[in-house]
Length: 238
Length: 238
Image (cartoon, rainbow over all chains, first blue to last red; front, side, top):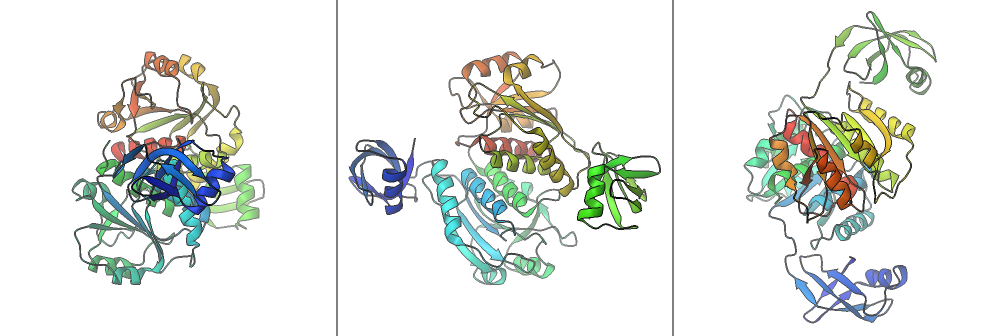
């Protein structure tokens, strides 16, 4: 079962230029091949390739699913990218497979990484979305300063959490928090050196509650992964 | 805070030859440096380097902890290694950080990988154990045929699970199973092509219960990671 990205219209779907190239040149796809197409915003169709060109592949719509496997919760992860890109990329792949709706990269006081190639990140997330047969493509936001991210926060009903290791500031276990959650969750994960006290205090002023992920010392990407797993484990349909 | 492996005696500890080399040559460690040493079976000490040679570093015992951060559950993961070694290695690193007590690699009917360099795997698990400051080194078993693994199973009180995707055979969600668990857990995770029906039936005869990890299509290493996270989430102290 092969899934491609494209535009889905009333009577047919058209693969993006990149996906058309992938279908014709890499996979040697042919006329009448049966494939799946998603628009990345919830619609997924099954159909046959009816017009095959290297730059544009047209697909008939034999079956159509709206809100395909839509999750019953929403998760926005806000993470300080790790110094090592492999670790960040693995996290992104796994998070997408498990259930990620939006990701924002932040540069915080102790961040070691100051720049990020967003195109590469989009590719990884797109590949993981297709591989795990999802019809929703996560929203990807570029790297912003943590203070700017907080400044832009609007008041809404989402459950907002900041994971940190500072034992002088009160924290509640994520488990407890998730079990009384509304299903709309934002989780902040700091850099290798943790958030600074000032950053935690600023986040708290903006409505983020301090959480602990357990008593263990986790790497940044392990903490972020655990937050994604835990959210799906507690809020997702099993 | 630096953790090393070594033998812990009554009055002093001695780093292994490899760790002595690492301390002296790579980290340029010196006399009187304060370091931590674990024997990998629960004991962790803090002390000073009192005798420094490239092949043997002796450490005084200033503080000693037995059963250091011992978990309240035991997890034995039995996995078919992925074709791609990077994915397997990332799983092993994360699993060790989160909480892994024993790992067995199996070759099952649909396995694509028939060989495994166990030395490399030991290195990865050892590094992850040290990095996450653990005093228990997981037991690592070499690659065995799945049928031989099952043959060798003894009757005991452990909760034994086999994760598979075969919808014609009854499965219970892992979540439910864990919530009534004794705390001694064995989980089997199959290869990319899943366990065969015969393998699932054979495992069931040996006391393994079929489990599902959710409705999602996960890669092998994602399924294995989820099982580790879930076990720690449900059974570990938070």
